[in-house]
Length: 177
Image (cartoon, rainbow, N blue to C red; front, side, top):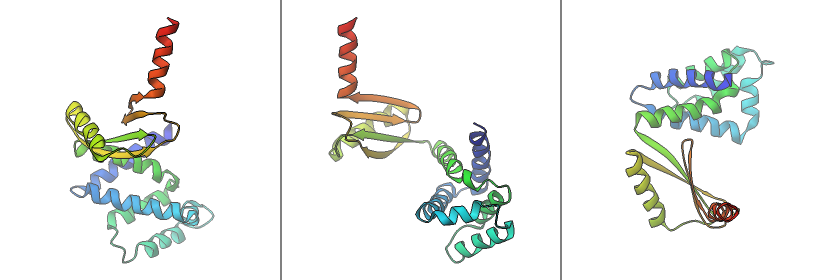
């Protein structure tokens, strides 16, 4: 729980630094996370207190040299290293995305289905929820073989379950009652 509060504070600070480059900062943080996922040794080295802070910060300088990473991002990563909070970077990124989406008046929508849907069906869902929430909708697709049919839509903490499994469950509940 405390990690969430700390992550929100760091994300808010990073949003403040980004000014008019909020989306670009998000892309750069995502790229850093991708590198850490591809090579877990990098995250280990950056978060391991067995290495001095100076060595870990030097690794950051070498990693981002001539990579076009904004100086504020480099300094932000160095602060996370100094405060022994590097392992919170994924949570900070999640919070950052939420704040960035809020600033840009957009919502992330994940559509879960058994198979890839035709483009027009995805577009219908985007249009419907865009009108409902009065925000731009960013579509994320997820294929889940456990879904019998239909779709499940998640927007933030809200889930709209239009799956066959849910309909069968509701039918069963009505028959029992």
